[in-house]
Image (cartoon, rainbow, N blue to C red):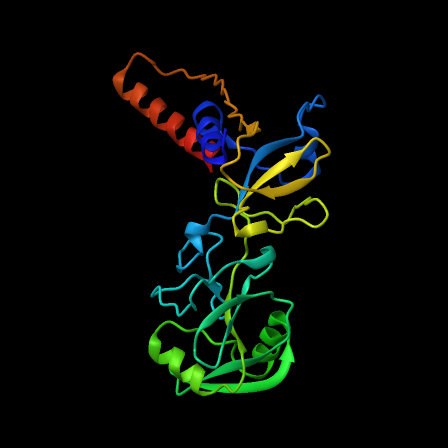
Amino acid sequence: MNWTEAQHYCREKYTDLATIESMDDISRLKPDFSYSWAWIGLRDDPKSWKESMGNDTNSWRWSATGQTSKTGYHNWNLGQPYSKNANANCVSMDTNGKWYDTDCHSLRSFVCYDVTNQTEKTYVFISDEKTWNDAQAYCREHYTDLPMIENIVENNEVCSAVSAEVWIGLYRVPWTWSDNTQSSFQIWKKGQPNKYGGDQLCTVESNLHEWNDVTCSDKLPFICHQVLKLKTAVRMKIQTDADITDPATNAQILQQVKFFLCFLKM
């Protein structure tokens, strides 16, 4: 099946496409893994970040808040964001005010912002070239943060402060599981992911337990996972000299049982 069909099948028959968060999870795969590649639940859904400011786990976020955009405003240049080579996860602004997704390890000048009079923002151009993370650290140490831009007025104010392409505070963390969670555990094959051609946005697991990004429409075997729900049985023995056939006594006992069960759920 393709990735979406596999996801639907796993959710219908089991819990979801496989989420792999540790070597313990890897060890749960059967040793007779008899095919070269199989779908797992990891992907980088472009609906969450391409030409939009979504609110999913892998959507664009502002450094100052760690949250997705409140207004949905963006000023992407034509054809952006592209996520070239799977590592363009930070955003720069050109002198024309347009935004580009850029490799976070690239060196750029940057803008910091500071808040004065409680709400008024001032922007400072820093000509030194740094990586996005180093620029973020510098702004947080000396000012407030890299700029957060939620409307055209703020975009123009940042643009008017720059004389070169600069980092702004927009970034994202790609690759989320089918259930929209993230994990720091990754076992990519060497040189992967690379999002070759810009459309390799779903992940496969090899029989050597290495991951690769491939086109989501490919027809492949797949791995589902099942979360087992354990049931707890509670046995109670009631000792009393009272007449348990009395309705008032029964009501009191039932109230005590309900209280005990609520306590177990805490």
